[in-house]
Image 1 (cartoon, rainbow, N blue to C red):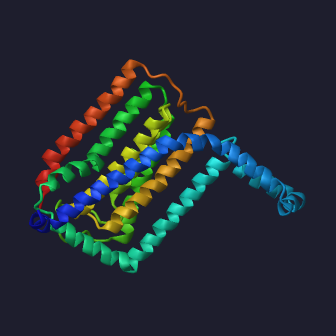
Image 2: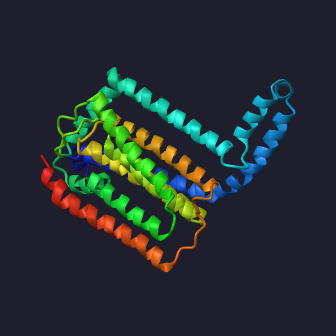
Image 3: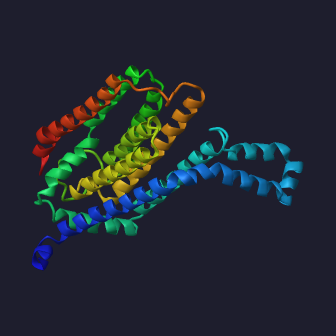
Amino acid sequence: MITLIQKNQQLFLLGVFILLVMVVLWVLQYVIIRYGQKVLNQVPTYWTVLEQYFGKSKRLTRLKNNYPKLYHASLQRLTVQHFYGLPLTVLFLVMGYILALFFGLVEDVVTSDTIVATDFFVSQQMSMLSESPVVTFFIFITSFASTATTCLIVLLVCILCWVIRQPYILVGFLIATLGSTIFTFLSKLLFHRTRPVDILLFEQTDSFPSGHATVTVALYGFLAYMAIRFSRNFATQVRIAVITVFFSLLVGLSRILLNEHYLSDVLGGYLVGALWLTVAISVTEWLRTRDKVDWQISWSVTQVRLVWLNIVCVLIGTSIYAEFYQLPLLI
């Protein structure tokens, strides 16, 4: 057994990593389902108590008396009663934080910091799996974020939104998809980073950031957001979020294992996707406040069947793409 592990050390470590991620996500899912609903229900109460506490503060009282407009504007940004308050404030803070992380990562990559040395080490380790049977599996996984599959999903989502009479959802969906794609394309042209030497699938574009990782977070993240908002069951919402996170990690891992990208490329793609996903959610929630989007619609049997038909079409289309286009590109 020990000899077998030593001969397949990289494959063993890969399996341990995936298993560890699955265990962590399962535990997180269990904890959130068990206690998350109770915590969320108590948030308005805790926030009211916090407002009352700060309302008695002498400093805030002086601020209110001396600068009433500034005080009320700040208070409006922190209210939980409507979307323009705390929810919008949190979304802007998240966007700022993601941008800060992305620019920090860019600086590390450009200045050849420690992360670049990590990139080369991980790439060398992954190159040892080039003859492993898992390559075929990860080619299938990476095909879910291909341009062909992305276009298919965009088409199917447009049809679905037309059928359920929610066309304004497409505004946020297209912002997430097109915005992240254009941003990634321009970033590749700007940084012009070459791909790893031991690349398995022939690619002509530059490396940083990973377009597949970007699309996975932006596109599938928005699809998960749609499913969560349409769902009325808290446990189902949590499971959708956890599955999406695990799927995104698998796609990112596939880009590294196939030596299509360095680790930092994938991290950069995740950040770009998360940025545009946050923008798209913000716009969609704003449209909801304008009564343009309704998450409380009643789904007919035909509409539900259409959703499942779309999922089957994506699975079949991705399989065909991986079999007849991706596998022949193996170098």
